[in-house]
Image (cartoon, rainbow, N blue to C red; front, side, top):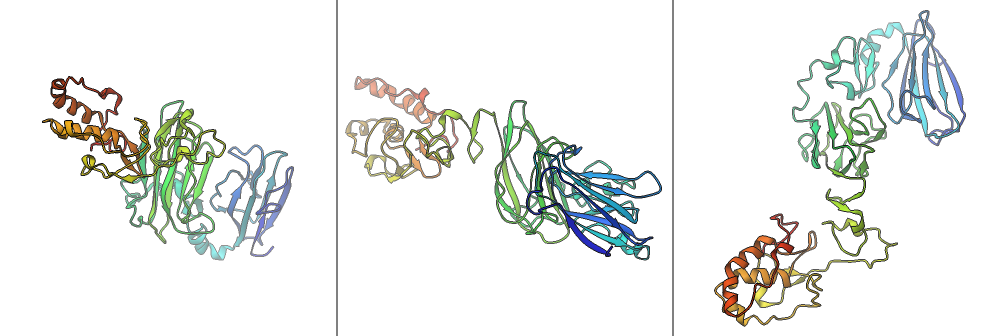
Length: 428
């Protein structure tokens, strides 16, 4: 054979055909040894690879060493102890993938010192004088090397990187984001929620080292409680924003790897927990499914009314306009929206407020009346009702004064949002 070369599955990078059986026999001139690096892998999985697989078998005097691969993540470099290696690719009659591409090298014993030093690819970690492991296995608390070197010298790892996450929602970011992340990072976040719920990851910003294959700096998401079980939802690098990712169960694991080379601004994302019967806004808020495409904007960003071409409801769009009513000018906001969806008022009209202006409690009452008739309009937050506290304060100050005019208190404050969150209600 040549001292180096490459081979791939049939039709690569297209899908490999069903019922395939391919065998490559790679022979190096003894006493040279064979090294194999799989640079891309997309084969029906997961482990233990019962349906489709790529298998490497060493020919030695001892019982042969067999290593089998499948799934969507390329394995670490295989450094064999043999001059002859059998590589087998097998596919069944059903689900397929894009297959693999691999490179082989013949390493002579005269090059043994160089081989030990250079036998792993740039993003891998070498231990046991030649064994290669992926960065995700370094400093993960579990020895993967016989010499335990993968768990030594881990103090350089970022102290605030990774960890356990629980709760209905949260925020994750690469170390130092939005500044460049440090080199040589391995961050593992394990996210767990209650049974019966799923997890949705929504990336807000994303900028890692650009590369053809995500080998150097990348984010990898596993649909399980750890990296050794379940399917890989995806591995991402470069500057394109990853898609929203949804787990199949209540646990998910996210890994961030950075090598010693180029660093970028990293990423940030929100993780939200909604039940399978709910819709998740891009902000992470959970809504009832029946609120989708109902003609009203319930998400702050309006995503519940996006892509509603097949809806029987008319598309609802929010348009803010300056407040023209003099009594309601000078509040904490200066834009409203009509028609008024709560009071069924078509447009702005000057209210008759001469009686109100004579009341000693005019200011708290003005805030409530304007909050109801001229609601706060924000293109980002929608139309907001006044908070319940605004109504309660006005009632406390004005109920007795209105009795003088034989008016009973006209508002039911309990119908207003009981919150101080400026995204849920307004304080005029």
